[in-house]
Figure 1 (cartoon, rainbow over the protein chains, first blue to last red):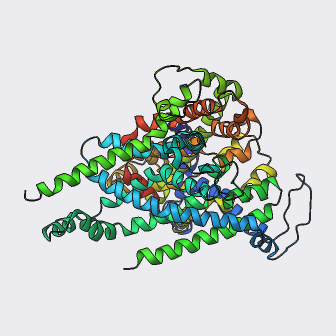
Figure 2 (figure 1 turned 180 degrees about the vertical axis):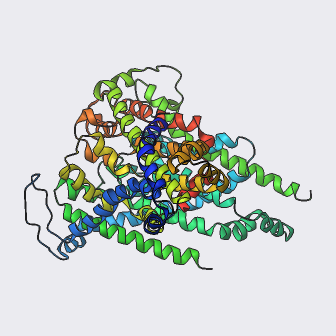
Length: 320
Length: 281
């Protein structure tokens, strides 16, 4: 495999130089300063440097940008970027489009998160017990997860078009205006799309959690005469609670990152901005309209929002 | 077994629900493929099961508007670059974190944990400003690869595997006078092949399917990965084509096929515990 060859080339390089020096040096002093295996520093350095360059520094830069008047200038030009305090945040919070986008993501989460967590758990429990056709079933539920959003968006556009298969099947029951151009339905369709797309990954998480549920609990529940539903409710659901907390947090983060679906499925967040997501507005404000400082402030607010939702969710799901 | 009569309906119900669900999940893929072969879009229920009029014209049509081969090469270079960086940095950091005691190891591990929770939305604008405006890496493979070059999940998966290896192996190699990199290369690496496969598969999906970042970085059509070219086609050109949906679906099939094919070939390796260990740390 290509990657393995690349790995070989890159790891073979430093063997001669770095290693010899580390081993022959007087043990005591080197150990005191760098630890027992100083070569570990060398091995971990590329990762650490990358994290600093593409995570830590941009993270600080984003926060800094959101408090300054930042605009795009010609490369190399020295321009003044004055501190403006909370001006960018004020601009964001009074912008009706941004407020609508945050509201939209609320609608998305209310539909997507329970649907994702509920279906993923039910399907994982069912898949866990199944013996025959296991491979076929697993593949069927994971395939959307491994496929590009852009590719499956194409077929959903085709399916949910006003003249598409879904409306043809529904006949007179078809919504008017149709799904993706209906202000009330565009965001729910996106929420269902993302649930379908991501479910495979969350089923995997629940399957991993189900491996750790003690069998004795089911046996004693069965002896007590509990029905399948009662066993599910009183044994499985509490036992996988940590996984549920993780699934809810990850589904929330996925939702907060929403961009491709409103960009392509509803033609840039339409109709009337009813399916615009905060990241889509960030892209429009920051890159299309050249206000990266305002976009950075949206990013900071979005992340604060995700942290608050995650904290509430932990409180609710991880209490005993 | 006294429970058998009660369990049978439950089992049947479960089978029906599972197979029904599986068909619902697979239907869009079937429809994507069928639609890509139809000369005229037929959206009636009967059109989902065509008996005649299938053609490869849509593939020719999309290829005329989007350079399929060139876009696939771009997707391949982007994906290959990300996988290579992820594997190299992941193995080095994972091994160091699992088996070596050095100053700053605790700090580094805390850093690894922290990186996992930083959301990409917060980095989107500063990364764009730095990489595109600051370093002038727009329309370059390096600009596309850079933000994905380190993958914390990969570090976790490798660390997890290196931790499972018995201590005696390493002690024996060190007694024999092998240096740390020699131990990593000759003893540890051959034993973590399964992890290598897992990481390659997990990493492949990300850049191959990634849309937003390459979309921001590439404006030149000849540098765009297929996901970006196809998205541009969907949002700009599709309205003017003879059979726009057919062409879109043909492009979608080309984009989906490598990832789905790889997944089908190696689906046994998408083990729940690997993903679990990656996420939970």
